[in-house]
Length: 177
Length: 456
Image (cartoon, rainbow over all chains, first blue to last red; front, side, top):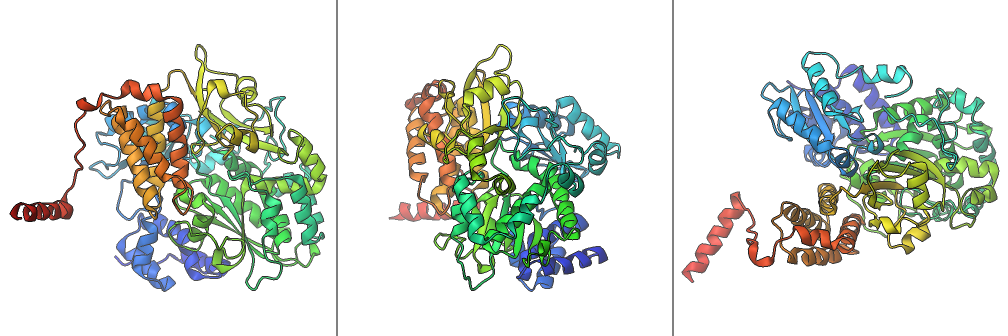
C-alpha cells in the first residue's frame, strides 16, 4: 500500500521545514515520525520521504541504515532491547538477556514466529546507576530490572496489557518515568 | 524510573543541579519563582559580546562533555563579522557508556539549559540554535520541548527577546542512535540530515560548521553553568572548585558499577576520587574491595584501586595518564574480570565505529574479536602483544578520536592487568591458527585465485 503522511504529520512536516535553512535537515526528525506511523521504514515510505524532500531514495536509505533507531525491516510488535554495555553488564544484564531468550525461545537478534517479540542487545542507554536497563520499542525505559520483573513485563505485553503503566502516566504520577 | 536523588550529601555542592529536588522544577513558573531563573539571561542580553566572553573566559569554565576546552575561548573563535549566519548547537547526544548526567539536567532543569543557550547565543551573535538530543531520551526531549514552548510564550525566545533587539530560535532535534554523533563534526553532519561521519578538520566548526555557518558546539552541562557565572561572577565560580582557574566550578559525576550508592553527584572540581567513592558513594559492596575504575567514561584509561587518591580535575587526571572525560566513573570490584571488561569495551567501539577510517574500522573489530577469543580461553599468549601493537596502530591515525577512545582503555587494561590476560591465554603452540571465515562471492574469488595458482 502506498504510504503518505497523515494529516497530523503533514502539518508537522510543514512546521519542521520552517526550522532549518535546508530542507534535507528535517530527515532525522521526520523519519522518526514516519516510522511511528508506518511501523517501520517500508520501501514505500522511503520513496515517499525522498520524493517530498527532493532527494534520492538511496540517500534516505543510506541515512536510515546508519542509525540504530531506524528499522528498514519488519521486526516484532515489541522490540525488547537490553543494554549489555559495561555498567549494565556489571549489574547482570546477561541474566536478563538469557531469561528473555529462554522464555521466548529465540536468540538475541531474532523475532518470535508470531511476530510479537524481537530481542536485541543495545549499547549504553544512559541508565547506568539504575542498571540493568531494557527499552521496549525504543523509548519505553525499564530500569533497575530483575529477572522476575523482566519476565512479568513480557507476560503483561503478551496479555495485551501495557508493559507497566504507560510512560506518560508514570510521568504524570510523580514526575518520574 | 529516573533516580530521585533528592538528598544531597554534605560533600556535594549543587550548582547546575540546584533546585533539582523542587516539585515541577522543569516548569518556567518554578524555575523563575523559586530558582532565580532567567535573571542572568536578562542581564546578559544587555551586555556586549566581548563582556560576556571575557566573563566566561575568566571563570575558567571548561567543556564538560569530555574535551575540557575552555568555553570562553571557543566562543571567541567565532568571526566578528561573519558572511553567513552563526549557529549555536547543543551537544545533548549523551552516549558515552557510564554517563547519564545531561539527562538529569534536561529532565529536571531544562530551563537552565535554555537560559545558558540565550547567553551563549548572545555572546556569539547566533540567531538560531539547535539542541541535538539523543533519540532514546524521550522524557528529556519532551521536557525540553515543553520548556522551549513556555519560553517562546513568555517572550524569552523568538524576536526581540527581553526587549534587547536580539532574536533567538531554538529547535529540539532528535538523533537516532549513533554514538559517533557525540563527536562535534559527526553531530553537525547528522544535524544536516546525513550519516554522522566526522569531518576532516580544518576547517573547524567555528569557521564553517552546520549549514556552512560559523558554529559553536557546547555540551549541556557546560551551558547550564553559564547563568550562574553571569549572576555571581568569575571569582565565585573559581572558588566553587579547588581554587585556581584551572580547577574552577563543580562537576557532575555519574557513578555506576560496584559501589554501595551508585548515582549522580555534583562535586567541587578537585575532590579526590577516593573521597567520592568511599565517603559519598559508601565504598565497595559488603565483603568486597575495589579493583579498578574508569574515571571518565569507557574511553578513559583505567585507574587501579591504589591510584584512587587522584583529584578529579582535568589536569590531575591527565597527569595520572587518564582523563576526566564525561565524568562517568564505572567501578569494578575484586570479583570482576578485566579481560571481560576489555572485550565489552572494544565491542562497543567496534559497533559504533562509523567506518570511514581503516585503523578504526578494522582496529576496533580486531581488538574485539581477539579479546573475545581470549575470554573464551582460546587465545594465545602472543595475542597480548599483538593487541598492544594494534592499539598503538590505532591511536592518532584517524579523522576523529573514536579509535583512540577504544585503544586507550584497552591498552591500559593490558598493561595494568597483564597477568589476568596471561592467566587465561594458552601457550602459542596449543592454539589453532585462526582461519578467516569467508563466504559467498569472496569465497568464490579465493577459490578461483587458488585454482589459477595451482595451474601455474
